Every structure is written in structure tokens, then in C-alpha cells.
Amino acid sequence: MKRRSIKSRVEQRRRQQKREFLLVMAGFTLLLGGWLWYHFIYIRTPEYAMRQITQAFSVRDAAKVERYIDFDRVLDAAYDDLTDDLLYYDAALTDETRKRYATFYDVIKPQMLHGLKDTLHRFAATGEWLLPDGADLTKGRQLGIDFERFLERSQLRNTEVLRTGAFHLQNRQATGQVELRDRHSQTEFSMVISLEQAKDGHWQIIRLENYRQYLDTIAPRQNQDIADYIAATRDVILTGNEELENLQDRFQQLTRSAGGQLSGSAAKPLGELIRSDILPLLKKRQARLDEVPVPLGAQYLANQRHLSTDLAIAAWQHYLKAIETGSYEEFNIAETLKKQEVETDLRIKDIIRHNTVSQALPEIP
Image (cartoon, rainbow, N blue to C red; front, side, top):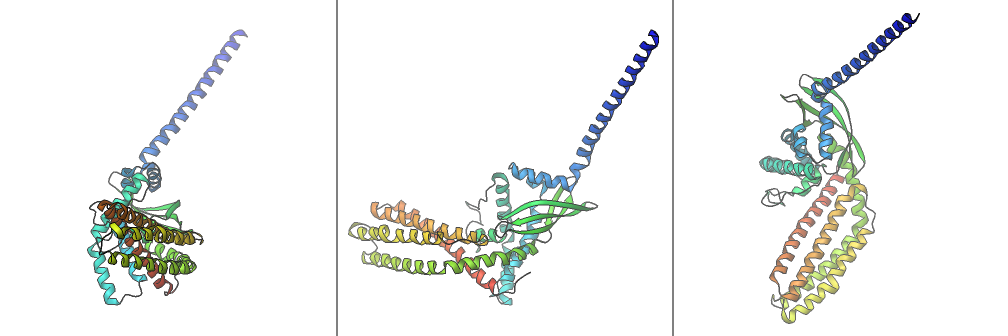
């Protein structure tokens, strides 16, 4: 009996060890299978590429972003869609003028694509939309086009990714949907993207298939908000601009009376005009604008108006300091700020002109 008991326990222990061994092998097989699936299958899928893009943007890894997005091909097609859209919305253009503008956009395309790619690279690296600077040809209006406004019209800065859908594969090509939202109008849109598999197996986004449709979908919604905001602020702008023009005329008259001299006896009335009239008026006008509710789609226009006021105030403050101290350096700073203010005002006029034209077009469903 004792021998049977010992033998039974030994057999039971062997069976338990065998089960434990099989469980360990099963777990190892699962782990190995998961590792093989991840490293040899999953990382070679569009889903993995989209996950890597999201992660790369969150950790500011520009190199990884550019590994999974072929910016050259994406921007090349998107640029054509955007410029076609710009020409479509400008009903004031004749057919001949539209052709000349189309040629103009083709001529500056290499420089614009370089500026867009550089801007996107810096956004991926910093999370900020930094505009071209230094000797870059897309800085300001050197190419005959306002790059800042062009970037805004692309809708890149106000578009966010909500989620990705399923992908359909055919050979080394894939298409899928990405759900987007325009933050300005809260409009959601299903963007169809195309991807291509590189030689090493990873996937890259190569085209936004219905980017033009996205522009045409959100533009009417943004335009309505802008139109409402323009109407709501019309009296403030007209009154403020008229008062400011009168003060600027007085400033020019005082300057002419002083023979262009901004020092000596001429300095006091000029300084007093800036300090007591021009600066308070600019601040008062902006305060009245700030009281007007801004629709989501008009945020950009409202921000540009605020920027224009800030630049104007800063310019006049430096003019005042130049008059009081006779400093040419302060005068040069004021002139630089004034040029920036003029550029901003031109951008504001372009937004308003574009909106006026757009309101005359049939609504796009």
C-alpha cells in the first residue's frame, strides 16, 4: 500500500510537471508568435504607420513624421488642389486673368512647396507653426503672395485628427479614411488618404485624395461666421478708422509744419498727439472689438485685427520715444513695426474681400 501511494504521488507530480511544461511552452509560443507578428507583420501595415505618425507628432520627432509621410508627394498634389480652390472662389477674375494667376502659381510652386515643407517640419519638431524667416523667399510677400494667408487658407493649422478607419490593401498600395475636424467651425470630415509601401516594408502617406472636397466643405461654414463677425463689427471699424485717419492727418500736418523735423519745438505737439490721442484711440477701438462675440470661424480674422492693433500701438510708442530722444534706432524700429502692421492690414483686407466674393457664390453643400 505504501509503495502504491509513493508511486501514485510520483505519477501525479510528473503529470503536474508535464502540464506546467506545456503551459510554459504555450505561453512562450504565444509570446514568440506575438513578437513575430509585431516585428514581421504589424510594423508593415498602414495601421502601424498611422500609429507611428500620431506618436511622432506627440513627442516632436520630426524625422519619424517624415519617415511615414512623403511630404513631397502629399504637398505637390495638395498645392494644386488649394490653388485651384483659390481661383474658383475669386469670382472677380476673368478667364484670362484666372489663366495668368494659374501660371503664376505654377511658377512659384517650387518655392511655396519648400516653404510649406519647412513649416511642417518645424511644426513636427516644435509643435508651433513657425513662419519662414531670414532669407527664405516665402517670408512675407517676397513671392508676390502672402505666405501666412496662404497657410491659413490651406486649413492645416486648424485641422485635427479624431480617429482612423480601416485600410484597404492592393499590392503595395492602400487607401483608408481619417476622421478630421476643423476647429474653426467644428465641422467633421472623412479624409481619404492613399499610402504606399516602401522597399523596406514601411508605409507612407502619399496623397490626400479628397483634400479639395474638404476645403469646399468647410469654407462656406467659415465664411458665414466671418460674414457675421464683419457685420457685427462694421460700426466699430468704420468709426475707429475714421477717427484714426483724422489723427494721422493731424500728425502729418504737424510734421509738415515742422519741416520734417521731429525734434526741438516740434517735438512737444507731436508727442502729445501720440500720447493723448492716437494711443488711447487705438486701445479704445480694440477694447470695443473685444466686446463683440467672435464666432469660431472668424477667430483668425479677429486675431489678425488684434495683431494689427498691437503692432500699431508698438510702432507709435517707438515713434514717441524717437521724438522724445532723437533716436534714429527707435525711429527705425517704429518703421519696421509699421511695415508689419501694413502687411497685417493687407491680410485683413484680403480676408474681407474674399469673404465678400464668397458670399456671392452659390452655397456648396
